[in-house]
Image (cartoon, rainbow, N blue to C red; front, side, top):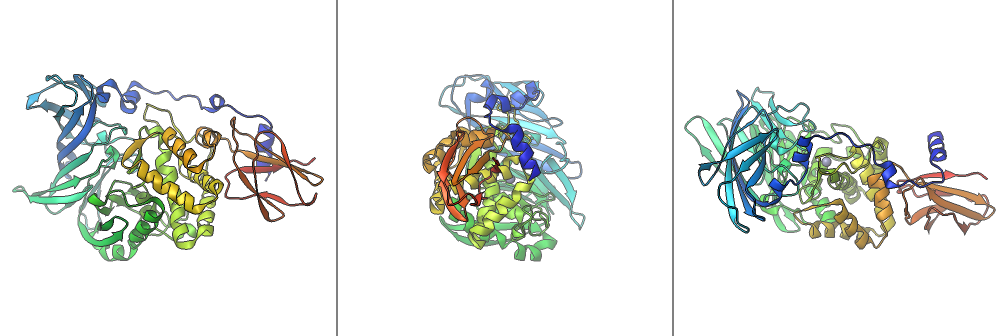
Length: 548
Ligand SMILES: [Zn+2]
């Protein structure tokens, strides 16, 4: 109580403009720009197909092989940027069998093409590489390759590279804006191990040198960080889910000795599919199937091969993030990471600064899962409970063009922003249709915050400019100020950006009333000078009574 009061006093009675709130820019390097922007050496070509063909050698922790990069020429240009992070070495790039000149610049490599690149042509280059890739420090947050062993001493290996970039383990165009249309992932491993990647297993080739090559084909656009390898002593089971688009293959790859446990525990996966198809529409990758793959780290939203390391526990490693008890009703990793199939894999941000589009909707999907099985009250308690982890340290949106993420508040502040918006919409069926239409309209696309803002404003028929500016671009929380004078309630918003106005649901003597506060004082009649006033707690705002 005290803290809210102090906070409100400091910020009373003025509005704050955008510019004042943008935090001081961090220093970014040329490498950040090369990684995070659509450079001229990237812009002229459009990715169409990758064939990543590699050999993974656990004993020496090395990867070697090549990536065939097929592309369509959009503009005539002769220099192509390919990204690959040291200590891996880009040893050679060829086009039509001819070796090309490479200028190395840190993680970026500029390849000069010999043949004139004509608009509309589909060409390809082959990038050869080898070495010991960066080992993951704390996967998946500080990623790379995790070279681990299972309890039986077998190799247990996995890639994770969100933020850091897929170029930490294979050469590619490492920017979110351009997704490849399809991809073949061929991985050669010691014959006792299995490699699981994205999409469907096309074939397994037995080689003479006691190795096997697994060929996985992805038949849909995929973002780079979604591509993964998972290598271990896997057992496998599957089921066919009767979904909105027909039969969906759901496959589960787990360590051999966890098979029985997984068969019981992974029943959360079809439950997830049912709830999310209801809320968001059909699973976006039927052609590629859905997989859960056990890994030696917590988990990641790898497209059509969601990785799992939540120790077969409910909650987040057995903990309830909301503190309400509802978080122990589901396996956090199965629900959260699979929620990303719609938000991150289907709808993908162009720039990682807009990563709230991935995390806010997905964090809110946890609540929608509960809503489907336990009702709206449970779902609301959960999302409101997660407010305890909000820091309000930095805005949700990061800096553009330098591969910079916004605040970790993109999870639970973002989820509460969406819950606030749903409450403003005040029609749950309409809200569900908005989420479904969102996934349809931006199906398999990369998008900007502005596109999502425009879409939501149009579909909800609400003026949302101030709303999004406030919650996405500042760290300040609106305050509903009110005072009671005789039988009149006076109210306004303070601590807001300019033009912040939202419909607000308040309780007057336990009865619900919609009001439309702005930064100007307004008043309405109330039953008595002793009437009780409170803001509906589904709104993520603060309230402050001013005693006259
Ligand atoms: Zn996430």
